[in-house]
Amino acid sequence: MPSDAVTADAGLPLAGFTVVSLEQAVAAPIATRHLADLGARVIKVERIGEGDFARNYDAAVHGLASHFVWLNRGKESLCVDLKADAGLAAVRALIAGADVFVQNSAPGAAERLGLGADELRADHPELIAVNMSGYGTSGPFVDRKAYDMLVQAETGLVSITGTPETATKTGIPTSDIAAGMYALSAIQAALLRRERTGTGATIDIAMFDATVEWLGHSMYMQMYQDIQIKRMGLSHASIAPYDAYPTRDGQILVGVQNDRGWRTLVTEVFERPDLAGDPRFATNIERVRHRSEVDAVVGELTAGFDTADLDDRLAKAGIPAAQLGDMKDLIAHPQLSARDRWREVQTEAGPIRAVLPPMTFRDIELRMGAVPALGEQTDAVLAEIGVDATRIAELRSAGIVQ
Image (cartoon, helix red, strand yellow):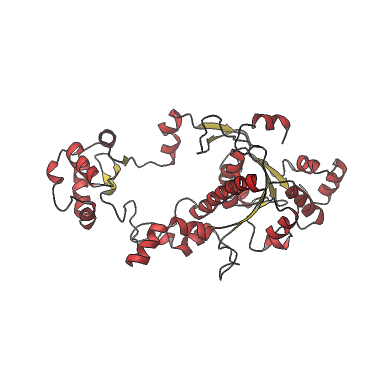
C-alpha cells in the first residue's frame, strides 16, 4: 500500500495488517471486505481470464456485477495462474509476509496447491489461516460443493422460511453471509490473541455450522417440544399479533411482543379498552392460541386508518410497527439520508453510491476503497515481493499473470 494511504488509514482499527485471500462468490469476500473497511490491506488472488466468478453474475452497476462491487471494495486484485510454478511462488511469497490467509476454494483445492493451513503455518506459525467451506473438514458431506441455497436446504432453514404452502430460500444469501461474519469475528479474535501470545491460528468456518447456529430457536423447539416451526410468511410462530395488516391504502406490519404492548395497542391506538381484558387476548400464550381471532380483530381495526397516519400513531404509542418497503423505498429511506450514510466508491466504470459499513466508530470513519479491476494491482504487488519489470513482462507474455 502506498505510504500516503497508510498514513491516512493509521487510525483505522486494522491498519497495518495484511490479508491475502484466495476467494470467490460471497462467503469469504464479505469477510475480507469488512477487514478492508476496518483498515487492513487485502490482496485478492484471482484466476487468469475470469477472476472471481462473481464478476460475471450480472452487469447491473455501469457494466459491473452488483455482487462484486458490493463485496470487493478496498481490495487489491492480483491475477495469477496458480497452476504455474511462478504464479504459485508469488502467492506463497505474499502469504509469507501476511498476517492472515483466507481461502474458500473447492474442497481440497488449497491443499493440492500447497496452500493448506498446515503447510503454510509450518513455515509461518504466526499466520492466521482461515479455511471456509460448505460442510467443514470431516463427515459424509466434506467433499460436497456447497452453494447458499443448498446449505439453506440441508440445514432446514427453508423449512421455516416462506408461506404455509411454499418453502422458500431467504432473499439474501444467508448461509454465505453467516459464514462470512463468523470468519470476520474469528479473524479479529485470532489477531487479538496473537498480540498477546505471538501465536497464529488455523480457523475452519463452515457455512453449514454458521447456519445451524442461527437456527437455534427452531432446533430447540424440535428437540425439546417435538415442534417443527411452521412457515408463516410475515407472521411469527411464538408471538401474536405479529403480521402485516390491512389499512385503507395498503398494509402495515405490527409486532406486539408482550402483554403490556397489547394493552397499549388496544387502549391508546385503537381506543378499544374492552379488548385489553378479553381472556382470549390477555396474555401472549392466549393470543397465540387464538391467533386467527387476534388477526381478525387487529385487521378490522387497522383497516380504518391510512397507513401513514397509523404508522405515526403506533410510533407515538411505542408499538413496534413498520411500513412494508421495497428496494426503491430503501434507497430513498429518510433514515439513511438523515444519518449521512451514503458515500461514493470508485470503480473502473466510474463512481458508484454505497452505504457506510454498519460498524460505526465515533472517532474515525471506516475506509471505503475502490473496487479493483481484474489484475489492477498485479504489477505493483509483484514488484513489492522483488519481481522486476522484465520478469513481470515475461510472466505476462507466458500467461502466468494478468
